[in-house]
Length: 195
Image (cartoon, rainbow, N blue to C red):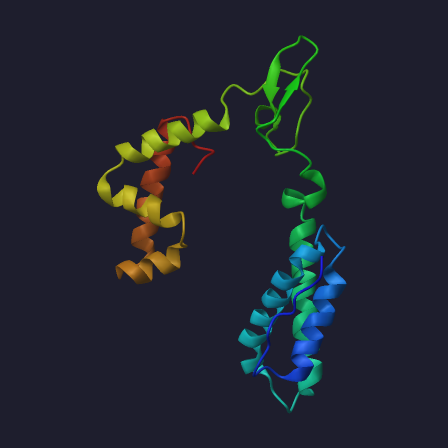
């Protein structure tokens, strides 16, 4: 597949060349492929453009600053890809795939995940509740909450407490009090590890 170049009209020539070179260096590392190259270039460029406003000519040359920013973001991308919880080398099959144990029982891989998030042995007993069961239980508890607590649960899916406090115009302590009430409801429902 031939690599199509992103357009960097209006962008510093050094920055554009640097981004292209660094994105090409990432291909083949941590599961990044040639198909990811345009996306990598764009991600590196966006990060550079967001940080370039912090450039201080008294501290370094602009080219040095840009190189450091891009290389640090590359390191962040590689670290994220190689993190144990999302290691690309471990994603060989879907968690919905099934395996057969010695007894001939078919078990979904998702049911073999132990408490530490590691894939267990198909010959051990599967977990009591599947992730689907857990989601259904959580949804049932959330739907039974008062409106204000249910709204907080919904907002927490996409925002953090500080952002929610700003949006609602309330103190964070008020939200943390509500969060304590939500956790208590989950604890009473036997789902204290879920919230």
